[in-house]
Length: 561
Image (tube, rainbow, N blue to C red; front, side, top):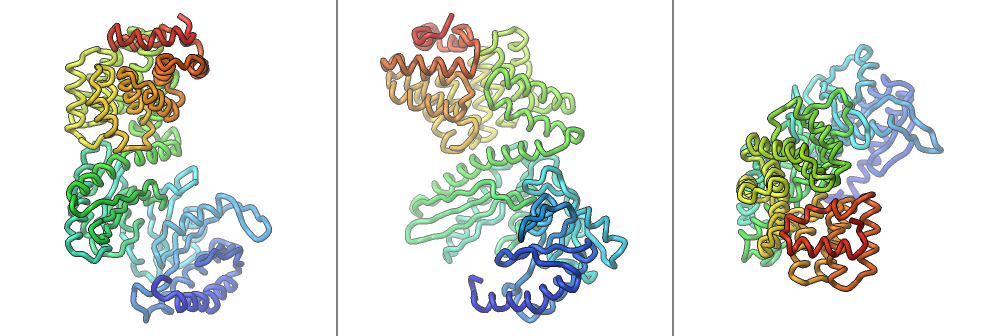
């Protein structure tokens, strides 16, 4: 359409009138509705639908054969059998939704069918089918087994005999960024940036990353993301472009879940060509920092759709994360249960040990300081260090726990430093460094690490932690308005996390805003019923003078002993 809108539209109408509509009628189908360049059709049987689809695709091959490849109109077709709801001139229901998802999954020129269709037609039509395995489709609660119809006995475009099985952890390919500036010099810049992104992502031990040599085989080619994912055996694909304009350059990137075509993340970066290498480093850090929480959330959602009998250690770990990230003792108990299931399957799972140590710390620090939680927190922290020697996330959680529960400052700082060596772009490691330095009263590194964490991952579900660290720094620097601002932002980032409320109360009291301090205490008691001064003895880690600032403010604002 972009190259020749008028001619393309005329050809599209011709294909409809001379081929598609006739074939639908011939095979006892009816067109329910049209959607611009697509349509929804209903058939009396699965056999009729598949016969119609194969006739249409074979007919399109002949009608477009004389045109150059990049000028051909090619259709995707998805077919499913299922109950539908008829409403005026439309159809609704999962039966329709699955057909639509199969259509988006298909390659141009192909026909994809669900297992329900395959079971009804495999012995009644002289066709062969490629089994593409179970696929997770957007907004469909359970995986769907997908088959490709083999047309005329010849390979479909992009067909592979056996699709690569997805690894047992999230997997990603970073494609070469497209240089759309026309400047060959930007080619080297774009390639170097992609190589840096691949290297940085490879530091994430929970992520399977396709090597540069495989990703770059697609350089200079127009690609279908779903086909690339099948050929490389990955779930996620990162693609982007580079455009030069004058003395500036713009880089765009987008992360796609290739199983359903969903865009998980997209951003753009602008900078001066004078600082081209600094810009390259900035983009690399920002992309990696943003991808980590985006992938993490996508994996959590995927795990929630799996049936309980199919869960493995990684799935139990994923299901535990939302409870752990709530950062509340009650939620942490459920996370501990799920992580126990994960560790029974894989006792050496470093990331699970790290999160479990953190959850026991939450219970110890804010739910009675029980000795069993203290011992368990330290035990799992040390296991995370033992099994996760180069796992930044496991080391970050372990270092934080050794500081809060173990009160071992040297071991904690050494472990957190190792986390940043393992992955300098780990937003989580910077968050934990920031909060530990804030507790220690080291204002400059607390600010530096917290701001770096927010720059790497501004929408992270854990962003309440660096905001809390900044609130603490400003509180003890006497900048009460800034402390109120950051503490309020921390509360907004995670309204169920109780600690920022206490800093907010202290800042209000110091600023002479007693009414707001008391109102904050009321909100605190709503999210944490029964809390008292004893609940927040975690602040004793600050030392007598600094802890008194917060604890006395809580008492003055009405928190009971």
